[in-house]
Length: 137
Image 1: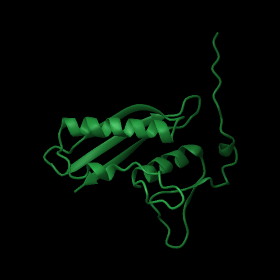
Image 2: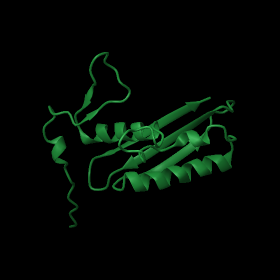
Image 3: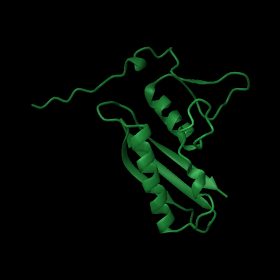
């Protein structure tokens, strides 16, 4: 009988220790913390996609740079280019992340919006999730 052990991150053992910051910021004076690696990974992905390269001091290469697609036509060719762009960026920055599916589309009847849905997981762990971005112009 095959046995495939599951990796449990040591950061998930104590649920009282914060390991990241939640995005979007919800509290007026303090940051809300994340307490497990699944939440932290999701917030890191959101932060990565909402940042352009050069915006983060001391780390000028951090950021997806999706704004470079801002005024492109909303068609299948652009959606394919965005998907391949995201795949190449994620494999470099988040090497342990495996992509299940990336779906880039527009809202029917709205030419000025793009929806990016990323379904991901980390092998041998319980980290998985879906991140959805709505870009409305």
